[in-house]
Image (cartoon, rainbow, N blue to C red):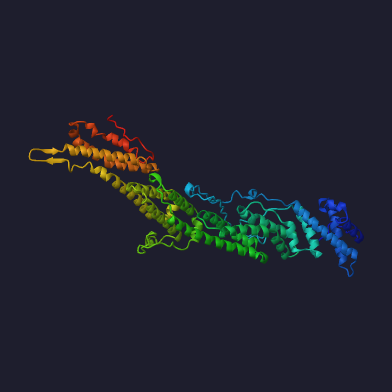
Length: 575
């Protein structure tokens, strides 16, 4: 401890200086602070304290000297506190963000459907700032690239704080709790500021403690550091712990993964900044919270799978369009695929599935022998798609019209395929082989729709049953032919009226199905009309039976799957 200035202060003068600044006895001393004044006055007060301390080292200590040192220590404590308060305030963490730090890409996928939205918004604002260990001689704790120290207090103020701390410790007046109580800094922001707190603010506070208590022992600066940051550090950890043990719901998975990533990324820095024995509890709690977050993520994924399987809605969606559950689940697993790097480490066991011999009608069968090369996470994603289809197949049975049930499955499986194709991560995780199987399923559903709807219509255009033969004549039965045209007209009109209200929301799929209908219908009708038209037109009221030309049918098919009703009467070019 060096005395400021070159000239000491006589003992009597020293006592007068100390008493002059006794805030309990002087109005002036209460209203003014020594360290707010000029340098000369500050140095004279510190010299006076030094002189009193030196005199107390002698064999005999007068009561005046003992009283003076007590007054001086109380005054220095006030001065220490005032300096800290003058340079302490809320820290705007936004201004400390390093613009060059890498940021995890934020998904623009929309998780929620109106019928399946949760009140809590899924957040994906996670930064990934990797820091490799690097040796440095500047500070014993600056060992990762991510730690960045800043000057929290000007160097002049640090010099004054150090001068005060040295004298108080020398006089035996230092208390571990005192420094922290008057030092506490207010940190802005919540857990989103955790990286800034640990890597910049906490590290800078540690540096500041070392600067002020340099030369008086590491135990002192460690104790001061812990008293300073223990509150904010515990607040951050308690927030993360509360999330890890809160009620598990699917929407919370991504917040939990964000926290897991943030804490995992911070652990090396926590170990460095809180490396002392006194701060071991911080390191241990951070590691424990990381483990609990991992377990919570595994539990939520399992519960999500069960929720998809058991989703109970029974009311068919109008027009056989995409079910809200399908949109919700596929957007959800698209977000899961965005967290592949994290989840592939957390999900280590295969999903619990049914077997083809289980006989459980409430659980789909799944054989993973063909997917042995897949990671457990990838198997879970495939399993979610399997149970989604299983649930949708159950919902399709609530349609009274078998054709609409097939259209519903075609729409939904096609949506699943398109979502997989639209996400490179999800496509890689499900694999092209499984994608081919899904593509085959929606095409099979389209074929089943065509058979269910059009077999009966096309059956009217067959030759069987129209020809007659007898002993006197042979040819076409006009009555049977008239009945055949009437039946075709009625069936086609009913299909047109009904299926115009059905909906295929994906334009390309809608056009493809219309084309396939025309490829079945138009050649058959054109051929039938060409063979038998003359038989009808030679009789009475041919327009009552041949109501539509080929062009009329082509126009009518364009009304299919638009999702709204059309006129009861088809538009006829013949009119």
